[in-house]
Image: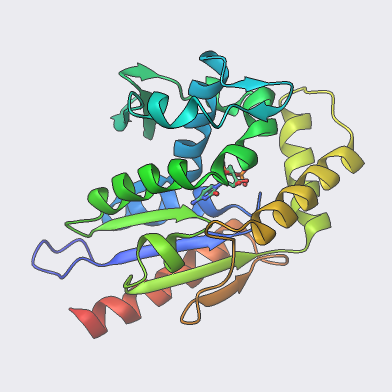
Length: 236
Ligand code: CDP
C-alpha cells in the first residue's frame, strides 16, 4: 500500500460537524503515508486572524477592511513529531491550540461563508494537492477544491449521536458542558453550512456516503481503507 511506485490519489472527506472526519482522515493518511490536511483548521486560523486584528465587532465581520487584510494571511502546516499531528501555523506562529477556542468556533462559520476567504483558502488547498497523495477533510473538498478527486467520502451520523460523542469528549476533559447546548451548536452549524451561498455543504454526486452512527472508529477506518484499496487498484 505504501509502495512508492503506486499511483497516489486524492481522497476528499466531507460531511457534517463533529462526525469524526478529521480523526479518520488523519488515520488513513498515516496508513498510506499521505499528507493530511484539515481544511476546517484553515478557516479557524483565518477566524483567529480576524479576531486578533479587530475585524470582528459585536459578532459582525468588517467586510470593507477584510479583503486588503487577507493579503497578509499565510497559513502553513508542519508535522509535529511529539504529537504525530500536522500543526497549523498562522504567519509562522503555531496556533494549533488557539484555533480550538470557543470564540473561534462561534465565528468560524460566518467567516467561512465569505467569498474572498474561500477563494484564498481553496487556492492554497489546491496547491497542497498538486502532487496528490493527500487526504483532505472539510465541507467542499469533493465539490469545489478537488472535483476530480479519485475517492470522495461524505460522512454523516445522527445529530444526537454526534452531540453525545462531543459531550463525552468534553466531559473527559473536565469541561462543564450542557448536552442540549452542544446539540444546538451542531445543528445550527450544519444548517448554516448547508444553506450558505458560497460553496454550501452538499454531497458530491460521485461521493460515497458513510453513516457512522453505529460504527466504531476501527470499523469506519476499515470501511474507508477498503474503498481506498479499490480506487488505488483501479487508478494504479
Ligand atoms: O468542529 P468541526 O471539526 O466539525 O469543524 P471544522 O472542520 O473545524 O470546521 C469549522 C467550520 O469551518 C465549519 O463549521 C464550516 O463552517 C467551516 N468549513 C468550511 O466552510 N469549509 C471547509 N472546507 C471546512 C470547514
